[in-house]
Amino acid sequence: MKLYRAENNADLEFSFPDEAIWDELDKQGVKLPVQMKFVDLVIERENDILLVEIKDPSNKRTPPDERARYFKRLSDNSILTQELTPKARSSYTFLHLMERDTKPLKYVVLIGLDAYDPVQQKALLTGFKDRLLADIRCETDTPWRRQHIADCVVVSVDIWNKTFADWPVARIAEATDIAEAID
Image (cartoon, rainbow, N blue to C red; front, side, top):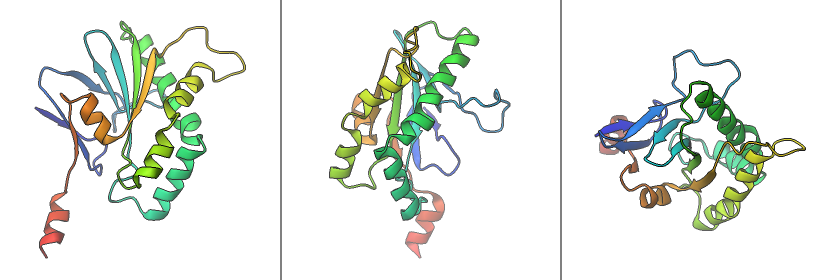
C-alpha cells in the first residue's frame, strides 16, 4: 500500500494499492512548464485516465476567515474558472504532448467539505459538475472543437470513498496534534 498527500501539511491521505497505476502530476520541487497549472494526480484505469484535483478548505490548519473566503469562491464559481478549468486544460495539454492521452480523460475534483454544514455542502455541490464541465468545454466565445475531457465529477471525501473504495482517503492526525491532545 502506497500513501499519498498532495502537500506536506495536507491532512487528507490517500491509500493506493501497489498495483494501482498513478502519478503525481503537480510535483513540488521539480521543473514544470512555466505558467501551466496541473492537477494533483493522474490515475490510469483500464478504460480511462482520471485527472484528480484535491481542494481541502476543511484542512484543520485553515483559518476560519480563509475557509469563509474559499466558500465564497466556490459559490461564485471563481475557483472553477480561475483554478479548476485551467488545471484541466494544462494537465490535458501536458499529457497530450507527453503522448500519455491514450484513453478518455475524466476530471475528478475532490473537495474536503466536512468543515461546512450539510446544507452548505449540498448548496456547493448542486450543479457544480455541470458548470465545471461547461466551462472546460467552452472557455471562449466558441466551444473547443476537441472535447479533451470526456466527463467530470465533483466529490466530497465521503463520496470519494464510496466511488473509489479501492483508493480510500482519510483525514489523518499529525503526531504533533496527538501530542497536543495528550497534554
